[in-house]
Each structure stands twice: as structure tokens, then as C-alpha cells.
Image 1: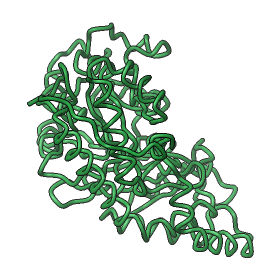
Image 2: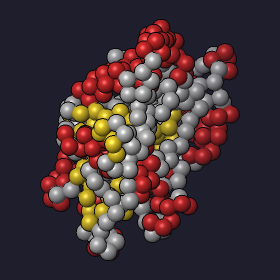
Image 3: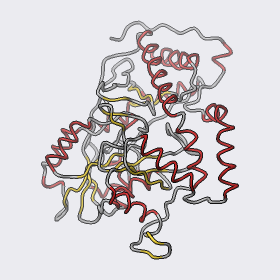
Image 4: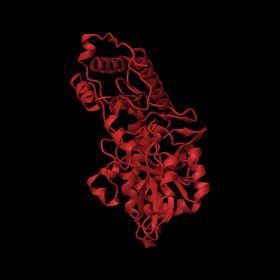
Length: 401
């Protein structure tokens, strides 16, 4: 319940310091010597593309995710395309996903030549709603003539797995593939099982903002299916299994060895960093609730709706996302106070100008459209201090007062 707002004491010095939405330099200071030594080994070895560190990272990362195979590639976007291409999803196929995600979720389906189908989200988790997905699939007009549903592509948004029990039931009912967009969920779990091993295939991003991050673009496909893995490896290297003998027109999406070396170093710390993110999420919950700013969701009226954590899963808080009334004004107010925040995402995919041909009008997905107007990501990274979090919450309290 929303109650009277109180301010959090803060020193003048602390108020003057900006609170970034993320700060990579703090992490770098902790692991600098490890990283530089790993990069030096690559430079000395002179094997910069698909070197030994790539093989080691693929093995270590797939094992961490509970998958039999890991295929490194150049980005999370490429990982999504490779996952679909490995499963031979293409023209004449349809893939169902969410309109509330980063652009590459839908663009990768189009890149594979398939038809994107969209269904709305659960307003509590912002993840694709399995019941609405099922309802969408029961409407024949949603599929283009002679198209067939081949896969469902749920996104583990903000670091929380979708309701995998519900999607596994859909898979059994429909006989389709499940492909995880796990770009934001490295280390997340559902029922104790890691993201990356839940579906037939999964795609990860190691973009510098991610929980497990490279110093540039990098991605990974995981799967327990050997044929999918072999095909993904072939497609990422111009369609070659044997050098200079091309079976298909693939792409150039190889994980470079320096990025793999950096990721190998960071992989040793990921459990600690994810735990620190969960601890900081609990501090936000505590501070916002103690200040009387929290209100029951899923929609805000006068206060802040806290992130919902499904007890069946393990959240890794890639982002700590609240719902707020007058979100844009709050974001601007926090910026004036030197407090960073971000909107993920301000415009649902079906309303993007370049995706109008999908045929969805404004109002088609009301939960996604409402979330796009209310969600706000507060500063979240493992090295965030309690004092900084207190300042963030004090800024919110001042705005709401």
C-alpha cells in the first residue's frame, strides 16, 4: 500500500555525485590483471579467430548452462539467427514471439525468412504470456497462407525466465520448437534448470551491458541437439565444414579469440556478480517499501510497482525495472539530480516504423503498449553501493512528493 513519503538523509557530497545506470569501470578495476594477462596470451599466440580460448569458452559456458553444445558467434543477434537457421527455419515458417523486447528478437525471424507472429505479455513479468500465445495460435487468420508454425521464441526479459512450464506444455501440444532468447538471462534458472538448457536451442548476448559481458560484441548458441550444433558451426563460417568447401551460403559470425579470453575470465565471477545483483534488488525493494513508495501491481497509480519475481525461477536482475506514474517526467527529474535511468523499451516492436508490414495496429497488444509507457530501469550493476541506491530512492521520493 502507498503511504506517506519520507526523505532519505544524504550528505551534500553524496548528492553531488552522479549515480550511473551502469559503470563498467568498477568491474574492470577488480579483474584488470586477469583480463590483461588473458589478452596477452592471445596476442602472443596469434590465433585471433576461433582460437583455443573460443573452444574453451564454448565448453565452459555450455557446461555452465547445462547444455551439451555451445557455438560462439559474433553477437547475440547473430546467435538468434543461427539458432533458427540451424533448425532450418525459413520461408514458409512462422515463429511466435513477443512485441516487448529488443529489436533483434523480431528482426532475426525476418532475417531467417520466416513470418513473425506476436502475442502480448504478462503485465507482472513483462515476459511473453503463454495463454495469450495459445490464443493467438488458435486464430487461423494470423498465419500467412501456406505458413506453418515451427517455433516459439520466448524472451527471458530483464533476467527472469518465462513461465517455462506453460511453454513446455504448448510445445507438447503443438509439436513445435522452443528457442530461448536468453540474451539478458545468463545464469537465470527455471525450476533449478539454467537458461540455455530449457529449449531446443538458446541464444545469448555478451554485449558490454550484459551480466556476462565481452569488451565488444559476442554471442553464443546453446543446444543439446548435435545436429543443430554442427549446422550452427557450419553456418557461422560461410557454410564451411571443411576449409574452402562451402555447403551453403552461411555468414561470417565467428567469435574472436580475444573476446572469448575476456569471457573466460569473467565466467569465473558470474555467480558472485549475479548474487550481488540480487542483493541490490533486495535493497531497492526494502528502501522503496520502507519509504512508503511501493504499491501493489501490476499497474501504478501514485507509487512505484516493484519487479515481480516468480518463485519458481532464479532472477539475475540484468535490469531492475519498476513501473512508475508519469514515467517520462520521473526519468527527467532523476536526470536533473544526477541519477541515471533507462527505458527498456519505449516503443513495442509492432509499432516500429520498419515493422509496419507485420500488419499489427496500435492497440493490438495493450499490455506491451502500456508497459512501454510505464517501465523504468533504475541503476543496477554488481558494484552499485547502498549509498547510491539510497540516493536513487530519495530522488524518487522527492518526485512523488
